[in-house]
Amino acid sequence: MRKHWGSYAISTVIATSLVLAGCSSGAGSNKETEDEVPSESVVQTDGFPIVEEPVKLKMFTRIAPVNGPFKDMPVFQDYEKMSNVQVEFIEAPTDGFPEKKNLLFASNELPDALYRSGLSPLEAVRYGSAGQLIPLEDLIDEYAPNLKNLMEEYPEIRAAITTPEGHIYAIPGIVTLGAARTDKKWINKSWLDKLGLKEPETTEDLYQALVAFRDQDPNGNGKPDEIPMTARQGLSVVTMMTGSFGLDLQLGYNINLDNDKVDIWMGSERNKEMLMYLNKLYKEKLLDQEIFSHKEAQYLAKQGSGNAGFFFDQTNNNFLSIQEQYTGIAPPTGPQGDRLQSQASPVARDFGAFAVTSVNKYPEVTMRWIDYFFSDEGSTLLRFGREGEHYELKDGIPYYTEEFLKDITNQAKITPYAGGGAPHIISDKVASFINPPQVQAAQEKLDPFMPEVRYAAPMFDEQTAQQVNVLRNDIDKYYEEQSTKFIVGALSFDKWEEFQSTLKKMKVDELEKLYQDAYDKMEK
Image 1: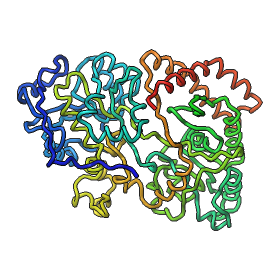
Image 2: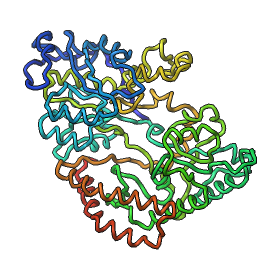
Image 3: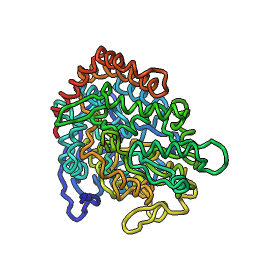
């Protein structure tokens, strides 16, 4: 049973006097804060407000195209009143955000914190080692009870965010809800029923169902216009099918873990078997012929058209009007008896969502501020806004009101969750919108085949990270190009040994060793 952490018990406030001034100075310091905030303030380690005297913080953040200004979002308006922490958001649009973020560090004109910052592991290590980001592990222990408890329940979180030197420079988004970490396998049950077919249990069953979808006019319009199977652009379809061929996706890469041994499987016979299966589907027009060219909007439209037989997505949002037509299925068992839901994000899903810089004079306050969003109570405020106005509680679970949902674009105006990457927890208590009953049922089909632990990409030291990046730039590009050619039939499988040989020349064995060393150092 998952533990729940939410409300800070105000009746059990423990007040600790901390001298907060003079911790740092230099470029990026907040002069207004220096002038207006007393040099000594009390940080509550529990309860609200966090401080009796107001504290001002500047946070650099990414704002998605769908979002309104953060200052207008009820979560930040209401939380300022609760916490007595006034946050000024420096908003940068998604387009060009990485460049603006890099410029902050290059110029050393730093904010107090980075919110929804999408820091990469390499950036966290680089800026942490340079002293521009501060280590957070001691602050988490003392001022972040929600986050600390989550890290104790899910040790893979700590392993994913701790550097080889033992420091934590960035906090991830955390997803304990399995249904928010997987793409479901949706099949057109109306077509199965019309054609007298059962839900496919094996890859061969799936093949036969797709043939029937192609040939037997299940939509009844007399035209051969059905799309038997589709997926997002590129090699997404490979990611979706790996588990049926005994291939896992551990450590954020094409990796199997067997008795703590790292195996990069790109040149393996199992991978060849999977690509041959996909080639067969593509050649027989069972797999969408536009899979390597269509855009995201076109893919989503195909879901909503009701004319797709089998596809993959996290939720049913894109086919709500015809949702009764579809059902989720379990991973098909492959030719070697494999049945794994390999496509599953780690619990620490969004790396580098929040970080604190060295110019921040109030790191304890900042850690208390962000920790609230790793409780179900704080996440509810972030995702759903105000009770009565935006959501109502049913059996303790928040649901958007029908009035609010009349215009779904409202959601992106009240929460930074819309647009992705916000530092908070997504649990079963705060996911009614993305986890309705149909999605829950689809996830239940996957649950028996989910890995016990999904390890996120490891934290490398900066030098090793550079090595990994150099190796992967070449290997990943080559793998994607050749796999695409294998699937569409532009490259014969007679060339498989040449493909394997080239991977070795590109030092895939060296890359495997770097992942093995990192895995061995993880706090598992």
